[in-house]
Amino acid sequence: MNQMNPITYRQEIQPSDLNAILNIVQGSGFFSACEVEMACELATDRLEQGQQSSYQFLFAEKDGQVVGYTCYGLIPATASSYDLYWIAVSEPIRGGGLGKILLEKTEGLIQKMGGKQIYADTASRAQYEPTQHFYKSCGYVPEAVLKDFYSPGDSKIIYSKVLK
Image (cartoon, rainbow, N blue to C red; front, side, top):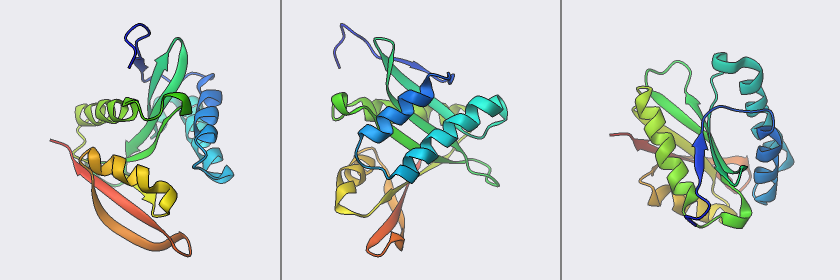
């Protein structure tokens, strides 16, 4: 990361974040139109519901622009298990370590809220091999594979990590 223009982090969502989320998720080339819409819906829920929303966010900014974010939340009816709904970094800086930093910071925030376990889902398609490697390199282990979940031949892999 270039120290001349440091990355700053914030949890409060702002209306302008909707467009930033749209651009980051759409620009990744990984997500379908339906998935992009879902990412924006979670942010809209947080904007409209505020603290009543179950969706939490962490944004990374560089030069006043959102360059990455996570969306996470307590899994309903659990005492301390959290879902990582989204983690995405803008294309120009992807691969530079920001994703790992965002994930570590998100894990820390979850621990502060009493979280003990975090779950992250991804697809089994070859396109998602870098994502699978990312989770494994961050200490996540595959807990379950739901065969043909997204479509024939595209299973859902559920990763988990115990937070210490």
